[in-house]
Figure (cartoon, rainbow, N blue to C red):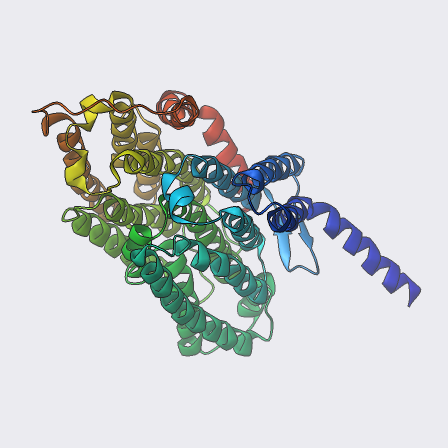
Length: 502
């Protein structure tokens, strides 16, 4: 009796030690909430506290490098794979917090922004849990923790009508997707008698199960994940929410929320449905006769194609970037189709590139909106001359999003397409390349307006603060630098998946 209690206490102690980054974020959440109640008139205090908390959590994450362990009765797993996504999520959150300090939209259309930074912290906590979740109930709780904060943040500028509309649509679509997903989880639990992903894998390996309910449950759970990553046909909320939400929140949803969704999608498929006894070099050693590779491939093709084609017709830059985000989810799903060490490492590399270039593009949109009060494409005419620094940086970000050299986005797409070709899926790589060509067309519309239209009469030069320019350069320079020297990020991505596939 005493030995069992002592063993439990030892495991709990170890779990708490490995839960330190999340604990720091929880403390940051509570501290910023209390400070906002005390110092209601302060406009930046909670933001500064949040930024400091994110930095401390990042230091704690560095301390977990190389760790691989289950914590809290195998509800969560701490491993290099989760660590990589947590760094992407945390860095995205920190950049968005810094972006928010320069947002005219936030500070002029809302009475207070204290709760805003607190909610970003709460959303980050949910995404951290989702990246580490290895239990169906924990996956659901993490998604809801993340979603509740994101619903509120999407409509934070409630004085603007489109923000309230965006928030309401987000809640409705989120509730439907969560209901579908939890029902799928209940079916999977009924089939296997367990909620742990690894135990589900073991059960499916050693027992015969009915393929119809297994496939149904898998598709329903996949629908919930597809909603989070904005995959077609679960993407309908994305353009409206991105357009109506503050630019900073659109940026956070496009990167951090997508990263958490891909982390749990990959872990769920790898841990539950792939045979671990076979070689990891071969894609999709599935336990059942269900062809998950084909299902994900179709999802990838439809997602990137719809995202790119609909983006061509957009006249609002935020909606254009929203459909671009949907298309990039399709590119990332190509790596999931491969589902081996090369493919998943390519996804991680691509995500790091996507984080920098997409946040940079949204940041330029925010700075321009601060000056013009508009996000319409027509109002970008002549900006290459009235705001030359912003014009050059936006061009860099959009070239990188297209996947052209010598940018980081080119390296990300190169490794994704290489992984697909190595797996013999030539048709999928061809579809990806053709979609990239389509994306160049609608990104070029932004270049055209900035540099070839609205030159006469010349517009008044725009001026920006030194702080906002420093943050812009911190995003633009790595976009080019890592396009030339990407070896450290690639090595980090490869090391993060070695144990995951070990």
